[in-house]
Every structure is written in C-alpha cells, then in structure tokens.
Image 1 (spheres, rainbow, N blue to C red):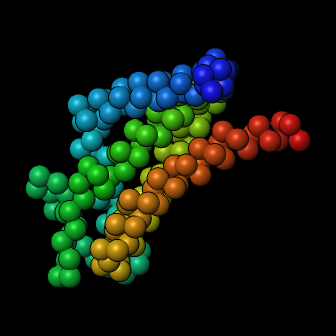
Image 2: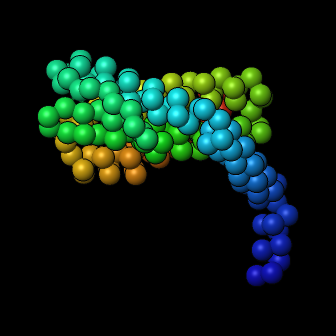
Length: 170
C-alpha cells in the first residue's frame, strides 16, 4: 500500500494536479485582491444592475435604478438589491484562477479563454438576475446562484480545455 501511494505521489499526473491547485489558489487570490481592493467590485456591481434594468425593460418590466450602499432595482412589486455577490465577481475570480492555472496551455490561449469566459459569465449572470426578478422567485435565485453558475464555469472550462485536445487527437 505504501508503495502504491508513493508511486501515485511520484507520478506526473499527481505533480501536475498539485501544481494546478497551487496555481489556481495563487491566481484566484491575486484576482480576488485585485477585484475587492480596486473600483472593479463596485463597477461590476453597477454594470450588473444597469444591464439587468435594461434586460428587464426588454421583457416589459420597468424598474428604477437606485444606488445606496448597493444598487437597487425597484418598482411597486420588488426591491432587488444587486450586491457584489450578484455581480458575478466571485465567478470571475474562480474563472481567472482555473484558466490561468492551466499551465499546459500557452498564455495567448489562456487570455482568449478567460475573455470568452467573461463574456459567457456576464451574459449568463444577466439572464440569472433578470429571470429571478421576472419570476420573483427565491428558488430561482438560490438555484441559479448556488448551482448553475458553478456548472457554467465547469462546463465552459471543460469545453475550453478538453475539446481542443480531442480535435487535435482526432
């Protein structure tokens, strides 16, 4: 058993996994510091609220944009606070960490992968906020926020990282 464990620890796959986890933690920490200690957090939150206000108008719901500590979208039926968690910031930090920790990919591919991922997350987050307000549903808020955004990141990463490898092999 000790020999098997030692072989696993000495394997290239194990070393790559440890390197990936270490780089992920490093890059996510750097992105987190940058996000939370610069105006990016507040601007991302404002963008999410204003874009959601516009998308609500597309589905026939008018809402006023009010900014106190956080932006609010308000009408006679709801008062939706859009805070830093709603902005998709945490997901962007995780995306930055996993994409840039993928050391097997050239830097140019990682940059492109991150930028495309940002677009996908922003669009999905906009749909999430709009649907939650449109349906006035705590279930949708909890489900979309806690589960779906993670699934979107994992699926995007899988397609970004593994699909090109399949194409090269096939």
